[in-house]
Length: 351
Image 1 (cartoon, one colour):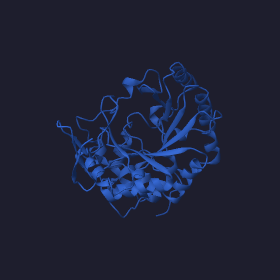
Image 2 (image 1 turned 60 degrees about the horizontal axis):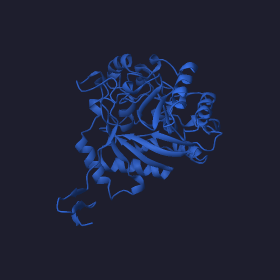
Image 3 (image 1 turned 90 degrees about the vertical axis):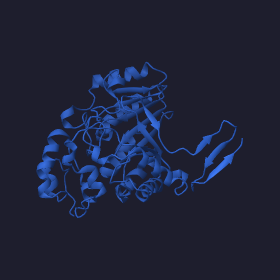
């Protein structure tokens, strides 16, 4: 298909681009009234309009089922608000904070756990006064070792604004790590310019920069996306991945293995595989925990240790992440343990 020149933001845009049939336009329009819609040209080009089950389309093209909510779903499924002492800050763990500096994204994922909080109708970047208050909070707490910059997608900010935030955070002695969470290298690779990379580089060499890239299917790591990632890597920025386990997107072992290998080939260390959160209207994209554990077990031994993510669940209500991967060891009260190898065979181990 022809690559759209602009981001698709309405039901009419999506249908006109051939990403959904005419008979879905009304349903997409109803979703658009509730949740933000944006499909960048790079992502639109990846979607196969002839495949009704295209895994890229499932992530980005609105679906009328998003308006079907279950009792278990929550507007704030991971409990950001209960840990937010000042605007923009989420302080859930002792040594790190989230700094939510933007409320918009270049694309909107249909499974986003912050979908009730992001989009053009939900405000703007932190104001100068709000940013100052957030930085004051961080300065006053020497236990904060890492600041995770998120939103929204923080790479939507101008280079000037990113540079300002980078320099102000790197001037705080106890902040040693800055981690930027983004989808931009995949969904808008042309945004990763030399100027952006320079803006991410602190003048204080004691501060290390990490970027966590969100992608869920190997097709997202196009040559353009890989080039964007290597621009960051070549300037000494370490990349890790974040993915969400999604029904019809990556919930089979070959697809998941291909994604993790694609990350490693690009120079990105697989980090988290998130069990999908209980965000409103996402039941049609969620998988069961037992299915996720089975997939992780299938990856073990068949996939290099470099390519193994940690499978995690964000406990609803703000209680943090818990690793929920399969177990391989059973301890005995008789002083030995049973250990399972990657083929499923049991072995006795006596320390």
